Amino acid sequence: MRDRAEKLEAVLVLGTVGAPERRLLRGRRGRSVEAAGPEPVPTARATVVRPEPFSSAHEAAAWLAGLRADRERADAELARATGVLNRALHAHRVAAADPHPRDVSPDQALVVRAGFGSGEEAAGGRFAEAWELPRERWRARRSMEAPDERFAAILGGREQVLAGEELVLRARADLDAGRPREAALEARVALEALLAELPSAAALDTDRRAVGEAANAALRGKLGRDRERSLRDCLERMETALKRRRLGG
Image (tube, rainbow, N blue to C red; front, side):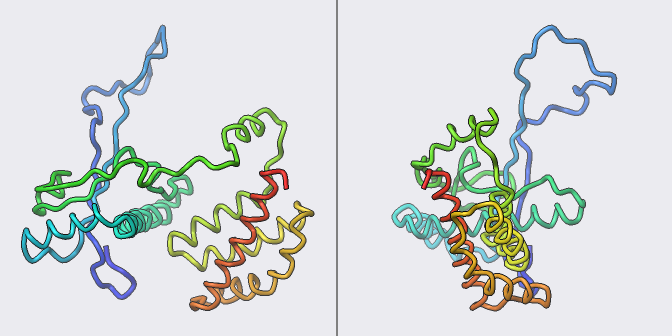
């Protein structure tokens, strides 16, 4: 995978584990069943390989030891690998004109590993040495917002979902995935939706200019660092307003 300057950024290896053989799949007519038993589920495996090899096994081992000892380094490495995978998913979404494949986050992974080995080992999901990150290192912590209770309230029709909530989530996903132009355009509509739907968010009116300027810049091309930083601040204030609503404030 290459960046916009066509510099090799990473090698992404995708594979499927546990998929049934095609010869065992049934035809198009379906089949009668008496019980809905569990079906085997294939697992997707994504391996992000750095473009430049380590100079020695000692250097590779020192890199891995550094990740195990430094949480910030491990988190940064995980974020970089997730970004590479999401760029590939974004490319697939656009190329296939399919809106349904979405970006992923580390907390959706069944397991996260960091390691080193030969190119053949990496392509096959094997390592000369590897470390499996403990789940608490990347799993999202449960907040005071009680999402399970709100989920039940939404499904039960006891709570209404604002259009602005979904738009803010989409803007956040694009911004975190390195797509600030898309995020700016979504943030403009999200802000207008929140101002119309959420009376307690009236203070967000002061962000209209900054968000509008970011969206206009997005239509022309790049936002620039200052506008992107301003957009991030505005989006955080929208998220804070929604959080207050969820907490009943």
